[in-house]
Image 1: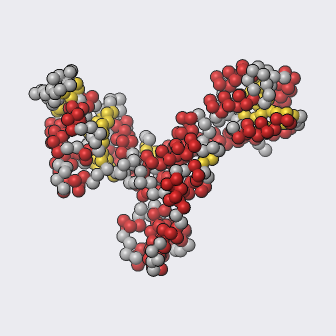
Image 2 (image 1 turned 180 degrees about the horizontal axis):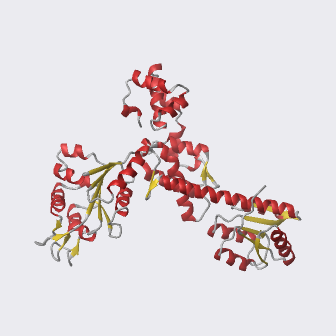
Image 3 (image 1 turned 90 degrees about the horizontal axis):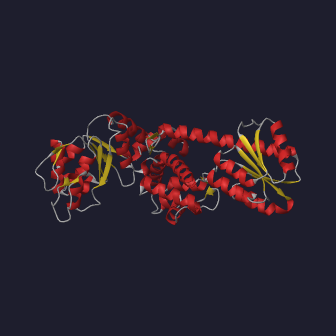
Length: 460
């Protein structure tokens, strides 16, 4: 037995007798009904206060059913719309369902049929809302600010952020491009006592050395050509808050020395000035480079490295936390759909598998761009493999046999590669790997030992 929704139903038809009949029947079933013979007035009411369901005739005067459907789906995509149409307009009604109508009924109709479809539409809408609530609840459990992840690596990072957010320690965020380093910096700032003060970000690789020095430390009027007025730098702008220095590894050695002095003395001297200003600015730096290697090669100051990396936070690439991909896909789909005021287009199983298999060199940023593109270009209410970029489709078409057997390895090597592939897919979970491979968990450990696989090799 279907459970009735307590929401409001809007009935629209330019025939007063039809409106009265539907209103009476629905009201007898316990629904709250607002009825209109003026479709324009009905649309104004719907947009002002979205109902639980719209039941409308297809052919009307000033605003017909198709226009009403289009407006409702554009502004309130979650509201189901049921169309009533004459037999000769079935083709148009079918087209309306492609545009997002929940269902249509043809005249003459049986009232029991209308009530059944209304019940189902409201029940379906209630389920969708509950699923959305549960999705937000799950996402809330697996997110920290705008950072999302249920993998062990990301949960560890969430705990670390909680531990260090309220401290004054400098943080160095390490990770490949697109892994979300600025999101970590924002999470640190907005979960600290500095949250009401400025968060200022600068990309150290985006500006030439002379301009970057002025941006960071400020300058006096006349300090150089073009300095027509005095300017505070970003350290002063972020005073009391957080300064995020992105791509710190690209900073020149000269600016590294000046930055080190600011960190040591807690003062900043503008270009062209002999006066220093005391600041209270927390530094969060980030880089995609391996700074230890840069230090060994003489391209990064060792003393600055240790000043910046009091607490290092290393973000794993997306390919090392594949269990987070599905969560991220759903998050980005919801955000794109919300921005476009459209229903969420769910990926097919094949499309989701293709997204899971891809290597994601561009990490989370690349995934976000792919999802936005697919949602916009998809011509249906679902996202198919064909909606994904060509390069991703080509990568997906590579079969497991091509990957595993391209160079005709020995059986031992095939087994080793297969084990590595499954462990990567399961993020190093031995129980999941054993289930996929159809063997005992102890066999996984025995194979690891046989093939001399280190923990780093298998614990993805």
